[in-house]
Image 1 (cartoon, one colour):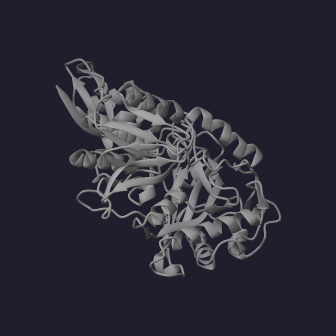
Image 2 (image 1 turned 120 degrees about the vertical axis):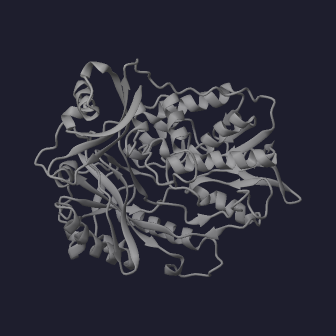
Image 3 (image 1 turned 45 degrees about the vertical axis):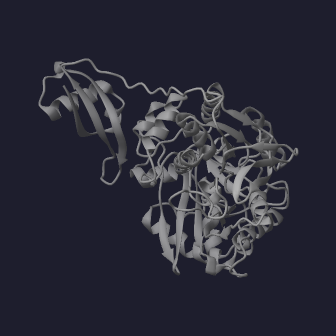
Length: 515
């Protein structure tokens, strides 16, 4: 017999299977020797009370052997099947490829950047020398922005598709099984490259192809239907459908579409700074303690405030994390954050951003690049304020809110370096003024948050795409071009690894119906 129950336990009990078995036996009013094993199905931390507890949903095996779950996916060989072109090897593109194979289509992925191993050299040049390779960086390359920027798998996109299927595919390719049970699953930047490589090998072993250093410069269209693409090398590649999954930073792709007369639209996004605290401040606030229990992970937070009719909110929170330089061109600064799997760095960082709506940005209403240009102008101003080589302008939190240039800056995780600057002169007034009101309010919600030990680093601007590539709600095809499937974050339909992966699966399924 197998029963599923919910239990609570203390942090040290959560790490002890014998203790959990005893709690389960008591909950079910059973003799301890009748339970042959337990399996955690869902796990979350509840820190609302004086004592921090784990809430667990568990499967209890009674009077029968415990059975371990095994996730494996047998993909058919599609070497001779109809060909679908996928532009971009981020999570949307790679999961679209897996779904193509599952449905009997042959995916051909074209990725402008390098494979995960080669990308490391370019990331080292970014961090150590402040040198950007526009084709290979934190945003471009195998696995997309997700490979080297954390691997958070938390999503609210459960209605779009099967989240568990995506998580199981990750586990089948080497991810820790904990991502299947944690309320806020996380893989870690240190583990993602091997997992992405394993997914690539699955695609190739099934007859799919992946080409790196292959930039698409035009869509080949005949009588309103996609027939393939042209690459920067001048090669034409044919395909029955094209899934456009290029990510939110591929500005030249938007220019390509516009040049070819393909409809794109401006889109609202959010912009602000990345804020870093010592992790112990966050732990003390969230766990109500002086020293974090060693059986608890570094804590996270989620903060939101309405200021002058605009949302100000934390975004992409990285416990035990690092602030990373994520620019994709020479004359801009963009910051993001990531954590290793153990989240054992001494700092916690989060994007803290303000919603920017279309009416907030001047320009012609029908200009599809209005929001993108606004975003880019701020990134270039941030680069200029930093003085070059990706040195980022920064300010202590209280100094920023009270209008003082910081006399010095705290030690922080941003490797290219920071320089003390009045961020009010870098950020647009509508952003800086709302941040100045929101940060003290966050401090009233979370003890210790509002402190000069925290540093604001500019600028967090790639929260989502500032351009939308429209598509039909039913067919997922572009309204002008049959066989073109705008997909993922870059097209404006996802925000994070899981939602992008699900959108890739959905676009591949839609392509299958028309090829």
